[in-house]
Length: 194
Image (tube, rainbow, N blue to C red; front, side, top):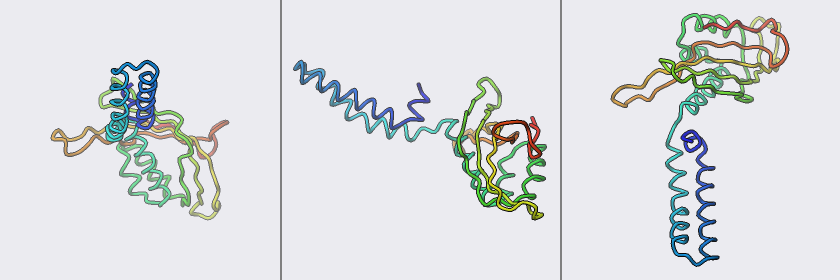
C-alpha cells in the first residue's frame, strides 16, 4: 500500500477525489450533513495527498533514476560516468573492456520488465530485468549504426545514506548481463558476474 501511495500520486489523488465526490452525491441524496463535511474534506485532501506522495522517493524510483541516468551516459559515450555507477571490480573491468569497443548513437530503455527488491539482504540488493534499444557502431568499422534490441539484467546494491541525513541512499550496479530479447545467446551475450 505504501508503494501505491508513493509511486502513483495521481491515482491516489484521483481515488480520494472520487470518494469525496461520492460523499457529496450521498449528501445530496440523503441530506445527511456528515456526508457533506466528509466529502468536502476529501476534496481538500486530494491535492494535499498528491503533493505528499510526489515528495516520497521509493527504492524503485531511485533505481529507475539510475537506469535512465546510465542510459543517458551510454548514449553520450561517457564511459567514465557509466563506470562510476558500477561498484563491483570484476563487473567494472568487464564494462571497461566492452564499452570502448563500441560507439553508441542511441541508448534507450524500451521497457522495465521487473524491479525486484530483495528484502532481507544486507546491504539491500535488487534485480532489474529490462529491454533496451541501442544504435551502435563498432569502433573498428565492421558495424555501422546497427539497431540492436537487447534484454539487460542488472544486479544492484544500495549504498546507505549518511547518518546525518546529508546524503540519501543511492544504488550502484554490481552485476549485469545482456542477451537477445528472445532466442538463444548470441556472440554478444555476456555471462553474469556475481
